[in-house]
Image 1 (tube, rainbow, N blue to C red):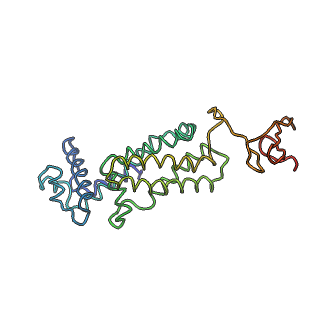
Image 2 (image 1 turned 135 degrees about the vertical axis):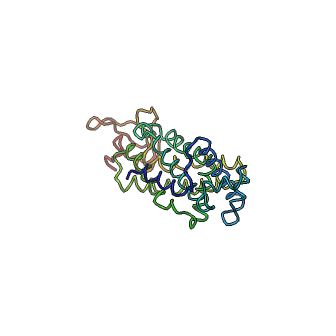
Image 3 (image 1 turned 90 degrees about the vertical axis):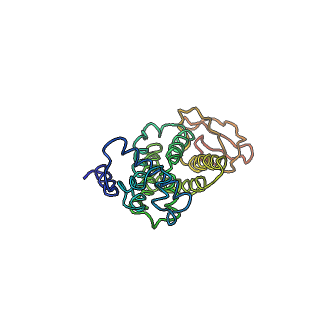
Length: 265
């Protein structure tokens, strides 16, 4: 069975009746969005199918046509969020995005995630996973690992010189740290603060990854030469060795080849 067919069959099992017409599908989406709002406002335990139906502006009988109880609604929300996450990943052209300047690459990824969480169901699923994990049936830690593997594949494309252990560790730190800040952003009642925190995710990841990845030489970024001994930038050119430019540090007096290899003390 393919992943798509497994997802479709799981989604069908959470529904009492699978909608066939567009009107029925739209009603299910409206119920799921309403459930997200209710769970967000009063929590899962206090939520009822009557509250959800009222928020959706539909009769309770219409809700029961599709969902037997709120647990089935919650499971359908899980599956809908999973579908959207996988669709987001599928839209990323890994070879292309890996060649972007580092900040632009991170910006594209962060904005894709931020757009995902503008949808009520996905936003509530993400927050509830960290607050009430026991409610979940379809989503577990494997989804976080999939996100780590996805980012690792981008980092590997960008910097093939890294070992598998290195790019996997970098990806793991990026995903866990960005998830923590994103959780704070999504829980913030202040839209301006939410925006600030989202921007900080971008700055955080760029600062963390830059020493390991940086930008490709073709991006015309000036490389700052520093003495490998004292980190001073006060250098003077000092001839060539094996066709490589040599430098002398004006502060410590030591010499080195352009790539940072020491010649002598």
